[in-house]
Image (cartoon, rainbow, N blue to C red; front, side, top):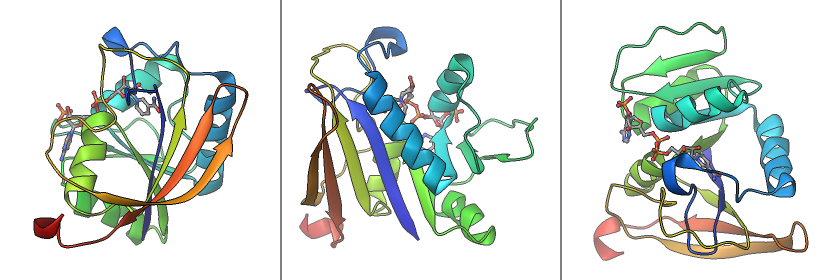
Length: 174
Ligand SMILES: NC(=O)c1ccc[n+]([C@@H]2O[C@H](COP(=O)([O-])OP(=O)(O)OC[C@H]3O[C@@H](n4cnc5c(N)ncnc54)[C@H](OP(=O)(O)O)[C@@H]3O)[C@@H](O)[C@H]2O)c1
């Protein structure tokens, strides 16, 4: 299973501003995110991201969508599954559908998956902005990780995308 986190962040690593604001996100970075999502067609989000993307009209994405929530929610879409299971079991839902590459996202979800050593790659599109209030790229769970830089791409005049491999290792030595 290949697990990818693809996030659009500020220069100081925020994924939203105050009250979930995403006005710092450029059209180019957003289009690149949607292009990859259209290719992968497998999206796993936390309920925070689900609620925001639903409001903005972009949810559900093409392909299979899994939403992690500890609440009981009944799906009203054919391609959306809500689960109250942990990260490993949530990924297993994709495996059962024959899917081997998944895009994972949400501040808390990013941390939960990194903590369990489940993430293979990070794509970070860095917007030329700094926001001191909002949600961090990794929120909640505590972990350490080592990364290997695989690529650097200029998406537009202002936006650079970094592509990292997460070095899998024994967390106790991280
Ligand atoms: N800039 C970007 O590229 C980008 C990308 C994605 C998201 N975002 C933004 O990120 C924001 C959401 O981030 P977030 O951190 O608030 O929420 P999140 O990570 O999307 O979702 C967290 C929620 O998922 C549920 N959950 C279920 N199992 C969990 C587990 N094992 N670990 C952690 N959470 C679990 C919990 O909600 P329950 O109470 O339902 O159980 C938890 O509060 C949104 O505003 C979205 O727009 C930005």
